Amino acid sequence: MVMMLSRERSAGAHPFWYARVLGAFCIKVLHVGPNARNCSPQSIEVLWMRWFGVVPQYHWGFRKGRLPKIGFIPDSPTAFGFLDPSLVIRACHLIPAFADHRTDGLLRHGPSVARLPDEIDDWASFYVNM
Image 1: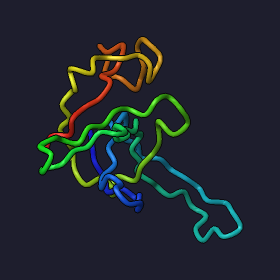
Image 2 (image 1 turned 90 degrees about the vertical axis):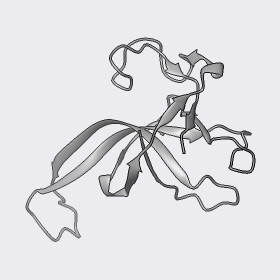
Image 3 (image 1 turned 30 degrees about the horizontal axis):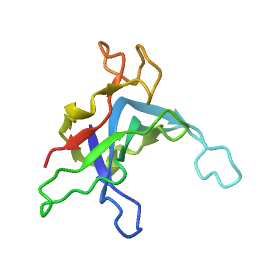
Image 4 (image 1 turned 45 degrees about the horizontal axis):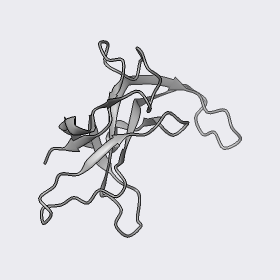
């Protein structure tokens, strides 16, 4: 699990984005568009991510004595993505919110490349350890 600075600027936006790294790749790309400046293949490093989102209506902070709470984004085109590794601030430690139980409502039930090999469902939410 990794964290990066959030690009959201709205009032009350969470300062970080969180993701599970599914893979790290070094790919060769060739830009052939009209504005191409280099015609040789270029290497680009990317991380393949499964994104977390902040749990709505959950209030956290030092004054409230509560850790931030996040959960996987339900399966959709925005649930997975690629990220430049230089944007990652650091790894983060997540604690399953055991009281929220496990669910297969975020991703189909069963094995998936988005889960660890022995998992068939997901924790509904996690606390971000600080």
